[in-house]
Length: 378
Image 1 (tube, rainbow, N blue to C red):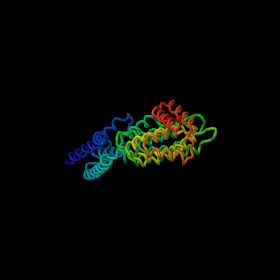
Image 2 (tube, helix red, strand yellow):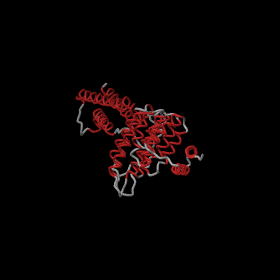
Image 3 (cartoon, rainbow, N blue to C red):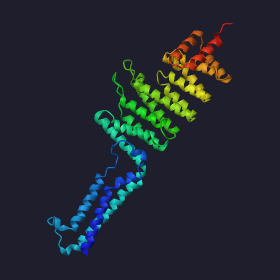
Image 4 (cartoon, one colour):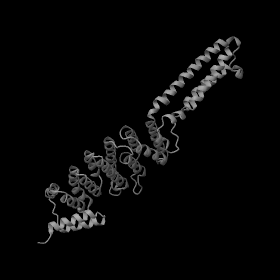
């Protein structure tokens, strides 16, 4: 009787142990989203070493107690101690079963946040690789970008953005003349793709969060810039400019017009951003978002002066305003008057040549029409 009971306990214990070993595969098949399965071959399975070790010790104890003759020199039970042995084995079995249920809860019930868990693992691996080698592991970065693009706008994307922000704070900006901050450039691009190139509908709050990170990076670059090494004019800033422009286009397409003040506040920190302001203004005019276009026009004149392009983009935008209706024409005239801009024929010719070289042919035609209208001979 005792022998049958002990054999049954051992068989069930072995079955429970084998089940735990196959638990990660079960979780992956049931709960792991399809898009996460298409990532790289990096192993993001949870670490089961400590759990398997605890159950292994319990299983060995059960087996050795059930069959003491295998190690009789360690466990000197005799036939009169069978009831005590049965009690100890039963206690160990229920301890093993309880631990298995706890691990089952951890892996199955809590695994529905598997995406967040994977993001956390990737962030940790990236920080470790950066601290060890000074570089970010490219494979982990690709997986983080994949997660950002294929996450749903809102909470899922926010998890990726927050992980990237924490990672960005770990990076040290290289102020050595010459080299680029490649890791920072890559992180900037991943942040942009997570909100501008996502396959899911974007979230306004996610875009705002990314723009805030960009602004913080620009402030750091500006603070570390020197005359010998103007970091604020480097490739890192150019990447932020391009990414901010992409976010602006995405927000305009989704009619997030209230995003424009934040976009303009980022672009105002970037030297050479007049061309992106011009493109945003044209898109706003095309979509009849005149408040956005007016804000761009207001910002553009100051930016043209700083960028040393002699207000060519400003005059180009004025030409578009001039032929977009009576109200927009009046707005353009007020802008010229309030800013005390003397729009000469030579300035318009120069602006026309500038936009011709950029293949902005529609703008070239409008500037020429404006020049003929204002300076045609009687």
